[in-house]
View (cartoon, rainbow, N blue to C red):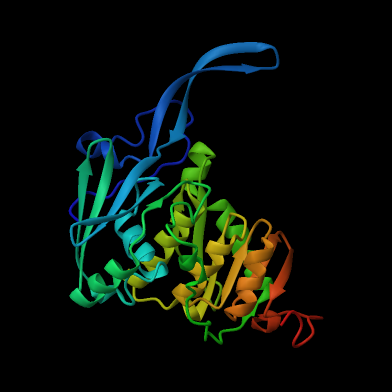
Length: 299
């Protein structure tokens, strides 16, 4: 990918041109807008920073596969993560090259994949109309709903106290959310509690895909830690975490019933309501080390 990386900044004390996209305006993650603020009976003019949301087309061997509404950052990570969690490729090396192009009002990430993977993709091709709050929109057959990744084989155990600390650190280190208040984040916590590959996006699925892609680009194995997300734990978030090979998915908000059943079936430890020093474990609690947690609970 040849496009220059776009840096992020925290909310400025006074309006300033941050970021200054210049010729990379299509890749700017935020925009400044004139607003009129009203507070405590007083009104006045000001400037606010809002998150960008653009259609991003994912193309394989010249064929458009999905259009996702996404924040235009870390798009190479996004493309790899999406390709892996959707089962389009099984390993990064099966994507032979990646090119970012502007296309009308949006962006296109054009990938060239191996002939074997391209043939398999033609067999299961779907048109996925991606939205910030929906993951399965556009699936052309309910048969696709039954396609599951293999059960997770990760055996890494996570200290519950370390997990709580990591969730709190993630909440303090989200520059796009700090600037705009409009994004979700995903990050990977290694077994020692260190955080890697934090990525943000207007879509929770996109943020997770970006983190998975960043991990694989860096040669890090998701199975050796936990994936943390700032959203609810939906069915597709569980499915994507399992497809990435992570043994633990921890979410700030609630899980759905289908997400819990899917996590149980895929041998994934699902943690939700992970806020402060508390959380709820919904499946395969054996991966969390915590005083008073009975061995075999929530199996």
